[in-house]
Image (cartoon, rainbow, N blue to C red; front, side, top):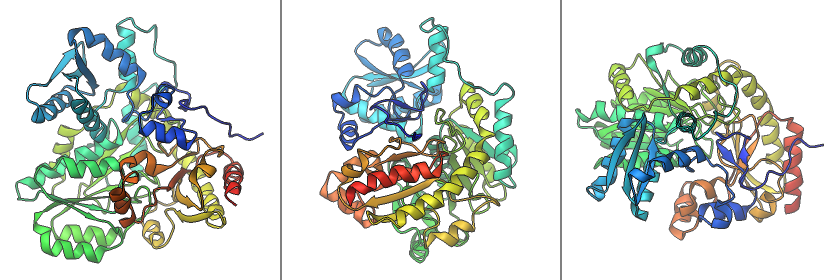
Length: 502
């Protein structure tokens, strides 16, 4: 009997009230989710926590509704986050939003308009500012609205120290003062962006470079939160000659460059040595993100000024905790400034989230070892299948040598494989027996039509499709992340669904 069974629409993946994924088993459900179709959305028990408000958070927000009649309430991770959100909303509509604090819960109440709702939701999504679902759950228990928190394995000792104990070996040269835990990976990206921006502003540097196609919220941070500073997008991450030409022209104005190694979702890795050399010659801070394959696989700190990474991926391999980190390269001239900036901009990690992460982090190498062994087999199957048009992974040329140069001893490619099928996407996707939903880096194999979930606005307009085409992105790109199930079961499920296209 197969390990893979159909997971009904809206079911959390995994079966936890803090799950980071949710089943979207058909293309109709994917479109309905993006278009806010009530028939679909009412069945969603959870969603990725930066996109869908957890039920614990929604219940806790209702506790404060009587004090803010007729206003929309958002619960956030700290007092500074509440102040920043209120300030952001008031820029376009002065006096429409105000922060509040009630028995340790921080939030913002604003006029209940669609425009302000959209701005607030996107702001918190982009920079990772939502209140932790575990913290919301614990507040509900304290207020007598729940009898107890749902039981789950937690690390019993010093969880922060346990997480750092496992991170130090994959961040060679870093000391504890250089490693900062973040409430989620996107908050680490945002805090690093702010730390670099603050350090570079006094030098008249306020422009940023995006190298390659990055995860949507990383793109949004660069576009939305740099004031009047220019933003340069170099679409081809391998075109370092083009980057060098840009730096000859604008290098003295550039504050920083952000890229992922490998990128999401095309899994491309530029030459880290040459990239670091170009940035250092021009006084540009380099922020690198190894989330696609894990910091346990890829050693980026020697090349970066700051490494940012999601620990939700691979390290929180059960798929039920948000977290991340930022690590400063202490050999860089501005290391002290970056540490100061990160302390200012990073959101605190809730204690129970750290305890949940610490209970899993010791399994990271074992989980990755199995995933690293299975991924090449799955990639080889997909690449050789007549119903598959294109396959991307960390060791696809021309990334192969660049990525291998970054691998830790014993490291591997990670679990992500992106591919495009020949024929109708729904014909393949709908009957596929693999778990289907957002996120990646879980012990559970997970697949999703990535462009639909990340860039639905682009795939549904002619201009958007042209933008995707310019970066060689198919609207029908599927993102698969291999889990720890038997590899023959993963391949068998894929083969069964691909056969429908022949």
